[in-house]
Length: 613
Ligand SMILES: [Ca+2]
Image (cartoon, rainbow, N blue to C red; front, side, top):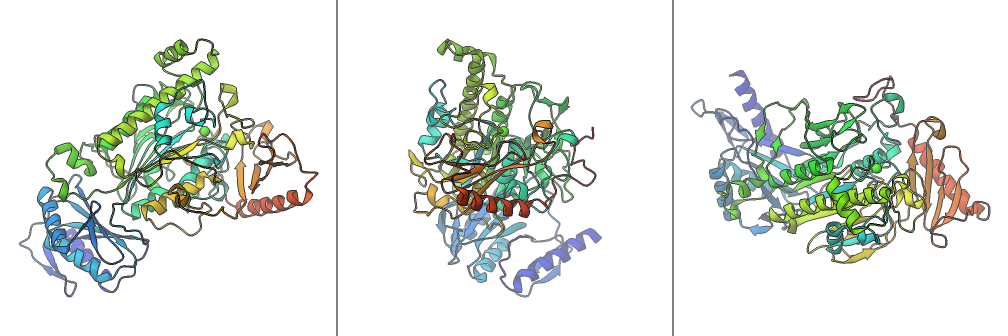
């Protein structure tokens, strides 16, 4: 009984808090009503004990119902405007379908509090037991916020897609995606290697500003990043705006608590914690199994590309085992198969569409292909060789691995369509760094490849599609970086993002609106171990306008190129252009000074989940 009473008191406070005024803070409130054995009087916020009322049974995982409240206090469900009466009917219908339904009110911060109170009352009257309020920046539009599918591939070169000029391989699915939206031809990864780019993607900040200037690895003496505990990740921001968040595939931002996907904002994780796989079929790295379903170690059969494709499709269909972390971050062990809420409608066919408010999702799908080892499935290699008998073995293997990846992405996009979600989904495709020349990658006209600060190391293929919003078949040469995707996605989602981001939204550009070039200097960092890299001394690049300053090894003299006149980066103008050099160098020094105090190693030198050696 004590527990129930505590619940009741909490619930009462839950009511009193908002009744004191609409502060529209950046948070999500959760209310449970009616609470255990009692009711709440909405007029005065008083809790009235009712011992005769049975507390509701604990639901395995309830369905969710999504309501937008715009600036004017108008309601909409599933993108359709609805009156208050209509809202009441829909809420009642949602309750009839699932007595444990959770209602999410996504509220424009500028709207009057009365509109929220009215919706809360409607929830209470419809017997809704749990509802949440997410306050969002002025874009709680009448249309539903978009789903976001962010596809990150690993080490794909600038010239290794047909739609970016590849002549000796076929990527029809990614080509179709690009044709349905916009290609960005001057899109940069934040680093020429994996972890830093991923850190920038998920924090919207420079990698060295969040403790990840280099690659995170199993053995602590060769691990060069520690994701800052104060960095707020994109999924956590989107959750506050009412999104369901999932990552399928490669995480690569930490191997143990607290730097695990479920503890940094993802509701769901089905993928790989490590930096790379030593084998696409065993999925092991350094002899260890980093495959996880949330906190649980799993050992799936099959080629990693197929595994991640299957897991992404399962999640999109709501047909995957699901876990939710508890408050202390651990994950309950019971498996709740097939009860994913968003897709209750498509799974059971029992929920009338008109009564369903769809909760938007953010799915981050990070393939490890075409990173080495270059191990295409044999049938894909055979198929490629039959078409290209003159290709070298090295090139044939990489091309087949890329074509197989493209096929997987095609299956994910087909699933998005089959489940009726494609029309309201922003899909972004991008690579985490340039192609690796030793394994036969093609970076098109760009100089060099992965690991270097030359264009081939950091400029990557990128495209984005959003039906009805991004013009099909468009191309743009705006300069942007991985970290810009954070605010871009937040803006598309109407989510409130932190003020301290380094990234800048490119949404206007994607939507075909005028957007002046950013007045900013861009920086790249890489920190690496071993003798060639001075055992852990970072090296850098910077770009402003057409000018780019770079070094490819620590302590190497900085070179200066004009990318407009010399896109191949062949003529070093450091001596001829002392003023340009000095200005860029000064900006770079300031960046280094800003970031160098951020630790990239844990106290004691061993990062989360790492092994001392
Ligand atoms: Ca990579």
